[in-house]
Length: 102
Image (cartoon, rainbow, N blue to C red):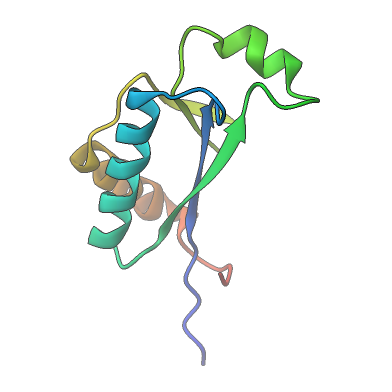
């Protein structure tokens, strides 16, 4: 029987064309957390200034970075790697880490 492992996807709302030190720090901390959990966290960047993302831009214009998991906000402005690891462990413990192959 094959072991199936799910990966937690964090949507990181940011501004790609505009330098954002908090966004860079958040991505770095999520990447560090991922390495601590066998690379089972991935980041999907969402550029709030991109065409078609006007509603995200209106909502988060002054609040980036913002992280979402499964459509729910999990942080705003800052996330430490230890907090991300804890979130991942709770996500996995609650059964979200079962059953779907990456």
